[in-house]
Amino acid sequence: MKIQNYFIMSLFASSLIIACNSNGKKNDSDSEKLTGSIKIDGSSTVYPITEAVAEEYRNDQPEVKVTIGVSGTGGGMKKFERKEIDICDASRKIKEEEANACKDNKIEYYDFEVAYDGLAVIVNPQNDWAQNITVAELKMIWEPSAQEKITKWSQVRKGWPDAPLHLFGPGTASGTYDYFTEAIVGKSGSSRGDYTASEDDNVLVQGIEGDKYGLGFFGLAYFEENKAKLKLVAVDNGKGPVAPSVTTVKDGTYAPLSRPLFIYINKEAFKRPEVASFVKFYLENAASVVGEVGYVPLSKEEYAAQLEKLKADSNIK
Amino acid sequence: MFKSSRNRIIDKSFQVIGLATTIFGLLILATFIFYIFYVGATRIDWAFMTNLPSRFYAKAGILTAWTGTIWIFVLTAFSAIPIGISTGIYLEEYAKKTRLANILEINISNLAGVPSIIYGLLGLEIFGRFLGLGRSVLAGSFTLALLILPIIIVATKESLRAVPQSLKDAAYGLGATKWQTIWTQVLPVSFSGIMTGIVLALSRVVGETAPLIVIGALAYVPFVAKTPMDDFTVLPMQIFNWISRPQHGFIVNAAAAIIILLIIVIILNGFAVFIRNRASRKNNW
Image 1: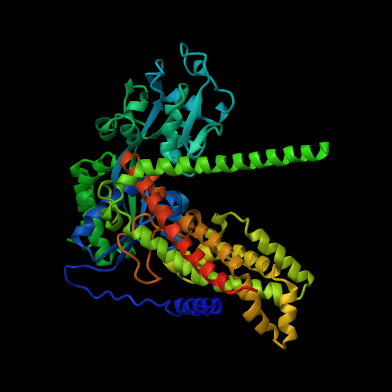
Image 2: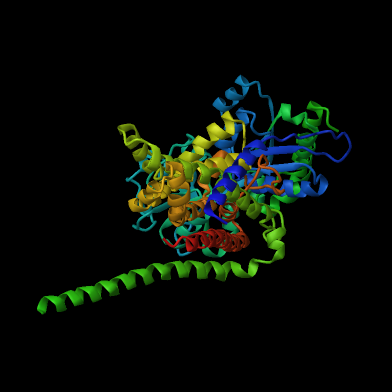
């Protein structure tokens, strides 16, 4: 074949592609088998839970196309405000300006707690001095004024070695960072800048694993998977040191570093039968899948109560 | 005498240095590839290729990811190649060498160095929102087509420029028009150069993640795209997603997916090289 033919072929093909850019979707099902699609985006922390629910939902309603993105809580909320998605995964509550933007665009929404996540404070296993740490000490380490001042373990607590303090934490774009700074420093998004930051928690795991003087924080699930390489530090909020675990995160004694995870649902989209059925399925099945992906489930009663509230507020059965 | 022996030493040592740097680069590459195969090779089986995404790493597969990658590759190639080659031909052969053409040329070269995430933002606004393509395969392909257009245009221009003037003069001398000269003489001769540029550009397409994340490529897509308007995911997205999961099993999955990605790149590029070699064998001028 001559080169010219390739050229003509590709010209032809590209015009074909442009021509077939039309897509008639029909949605004519009143029977039990639902069709249609559900667009979800948002936090990468919540993603594994929503993925698990969607995977189970596939067995129930194979014709419903559920897609999930990982733009982050902030990115997901931007799309939620523009009605580009039906459900937003969020690792924090909706912010005031995001809620206002929804109001401006006449979006009403449901919000549900779907799980708890504990933030673990982690050191290297060779660290034999730090068994627990107080919230005040964490604040002293992480607040913006600590930058280039709190650089040694001995500055944090008397008796700790006169050795450098190396800090590891999630990057500023992550909801985990927002939550930690809000809970510890007191203001969301406010911290010192001279620490090793990564959006990928596995990088933080590797960093602390290789640094005797390292200290960092990230989701409890990452500690659970790397127990042998890391050491957990109990956090003391004035009522004695508490180590994070399923029990202490669930009953709220591991405070302030445990947080709820949310889903936000556009009420307009909820009127579509497939979205309503998916959300119902979510609340009914979250309890069983949340543990499998490394998070802490709410109690059965709490899921049931949210489902009751949803049923009272809408016309689903 | 003395000088020539010194030159020989320089010559020899340069050869050694060149060899050493080549081996150094290849060794690092080989280490990476060996490690990836060591971790992931045993994970690849038929089920891995045909399963849908799952929260259990042992059950998770890459069907939607690799089909998405092929969709993106094909659509991007079909949209970027004709536009890129046409633009290259116009700028090199037809455009008057005015100041405007100069500015245009510098801009195109600069575009090749713009970070890919910027193209993602552009694609999100223009294709995703303004043209209403949403987060479809088509929006993704058009965005990546923008990303590689400068590479294809520059490669086309360079290859056209390398065609000897005598060849064109001969064609004109026989009474050929400008278009006949370009179509029958210049293009066939410069084809292999253009193809090389295309191969490089398309390899980049297969590996890009950042712009696709921005336009909203998804992490979880439980169906294979049937039309260009469907939602999609691609292999690099899947790998990125798996690598950030806490469970070690997902890291193994990611390694296996990387092997598949490598194989896809090799096959697609092999095909392009095959076309190039077949075409360039024919013109013995």
